[in-house]
Image (cartoon, rainbow, N blue to C red; front, top):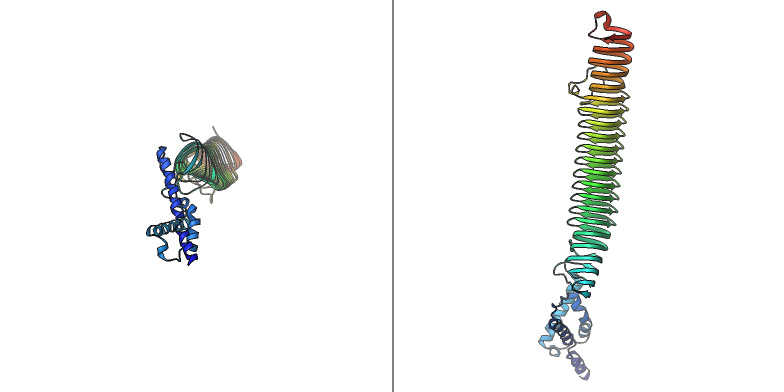
Length: 445
C-alpha cells in the first residue's frame, strides 16, 4: 500500500503540467515583446514530453483511474496522439513551420532554420514554403515542389527546387525551376526548367528547358529545349531544339533543330533542321535541311537541302537540293536537283520534276549528276541536264535541249550545240544529217 501511494503521489506531481506552464510563459513573453506566436510542429512539441510520457506509461497507466484527473487523462491521450502522428507521417507538406534562429535584424543577417523571407546567409535542413531568399542558401533538401518561390544568389543543396532563380544553383542530385533560371545551374543528375534558361546550365544526365536557352547548355546524355537556343548546346547523345538555333549545337548521335539554324551544328549520326540553315553542319550519316542552305553541309552518306543551296555540299553517297544550287557539290554517288533521276537508264532524259532545277559552280559525282540546267563545270560517269553552259566531262554527257560549251566523254549527245563535243561517239540532233553522228569530234558554232 505504501509503494502504491508513492506511485500515485509521483503520478500526481504533474510533470506534464509543468512543461505546459513553461511553454505558456514562453508564449506570454513573445506576446509582450510584440513578436508573433511561435509555430510549433507536432514533432517539436512532442519530443520534450516523450520522457515524462514513458515514465507515466511504465508506472502509472495500470493504476486505477483515480490516480489521474479527467484533465490529466485527456492531456496524456493528446500527447500520445501527437507522438504517433509525428512518428508515422513525418513533416507535413502543408502548414510548414518557419521556425528559425535569427542572428540579425529585420530579416537580414544569418538565419538557422526555415524563415519565410531572408536576406544574407541562410542555413537549413529542408526548405519548405519559402517566399524569397537573397544571398546564400545552404539547404540539404526540399519537401515539395516548388519549395522556394524566388532565389537570388547562391543556392547549394542535395536538390534545389524553386519557381524563379537568379544567381547560382548547385544541386548534388538536381536543380529544378518551375519558371526561368538565370545564372549558373548545375545538377548531379540534371537541370530542369519549365521556362527560360540563361547563363550556364550543366547536368550529369541532361539539361531540359521548356522555353528559350541563352548561353551554355550541356547534358551528359541530352540537352533539350522547347524554345530557341543561342550560344553553346552540347548533348552526349543529342542536342534538340524546338525552335531556332544560333551558335554551336552538337549531339553525340544527333543535333536536331525544329526551326532555322545559324552557326555550327554537329551530329554523330545526323544534323537536322526543319527550317533554313546559315552556317556549317556535319552529320556522320546525313546533314538534312528542309529549307534553304547558306554555308556548308557535309553528310557521311548524304547532304540534303529541300530548298536552295548556296555554298558547299558534300555527301558520301548523295548531295541534293530543291530548286537552285550555287557553289560546290561533291558526292560519291549522285548530285541532283529536284526529284531523283532515273539511274537505271543513263540515256533517259531528266524527269519533268527536274526541269526547273538549276545549278552553277562545280558539280562532281562518282555516278550521276542530274540538274535541269547547269552553268559551270560538271563531272560524273553520267552527266544529265537540259541546258549546259560550260564544261561537262565523264563517261556519258547527255544534254537534252541546248549545249553551249565543251563536252568530253565516251558518248556525248545534245539536241542543239553551240560549242564542241570530244568523244568516241558524238551526236547533235540539230546538225545536218551527215554531221549528226560523228566519231572523235563534233562541233557547231
